[in-house]
Amino acid sequence: MRETPRAQAAFNDYLAMGPNRSLEKLLALYREQSGSENSVPTLRMSTLTGWSVAHAWQQRLADIAEAERQAIVTQGIADKVERVKRQNDRWDRIQRLLDARAEANADLPGGDTGLVVREVTYLPGGATRERHEFDAAVLRELRELEKHTAQELGQWTEKKELTGKDGGPLEVKVDDARERLIARLAALAERRREAGSDSRPESSGSGEAAV
Image (tube, rainbow, N blue to C red):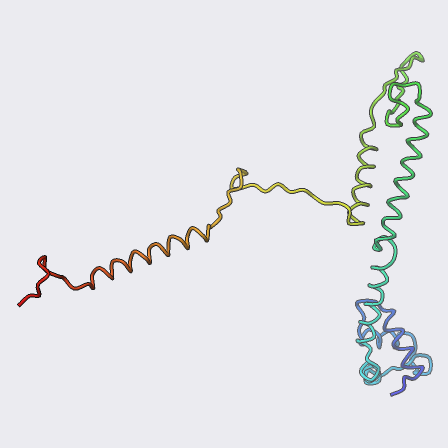
């Protein structure tokens, strides 16, 4: 069935209602907007229901939701290339900060690394007190950015230490198939020898047959 402009308009209104949409709510909205069908697609529930079935409104909604989900996955921060690009941009910004700080603090011990922070405290009477500290936070941020980028690109592997019960050394029990096979063959040979000795006929010491 060909979708009419009124049916298309009704679907667009239904879509715009969001996840809590329903045909009942759509019909109520139309009845609030006008008392005549000339200004709204319809004022009849049977018409809305017919359009919904004939033009597969629920399937169309599902297709639209899936398309939006795919767009989220392939764009912005959800896209791996975009994430790596943004991480690289933050890394560059931190490097520029360190370069500027290295130039400003070149007179301090280790200041040319950019990892030394100069803190000046103003005291009463106009005196000042200066303190120099290692900026562990910015170095930690650099390392995290580098780690995350390496993980995104598949260049990072975690080393895991295996331990046994209660954190002790891991006990590995290996069944030696060869030794077990040899033992079984030896036991089988012993049983055969015993069975063979039990089935032999007894003979007299003189070699004469018994009468």
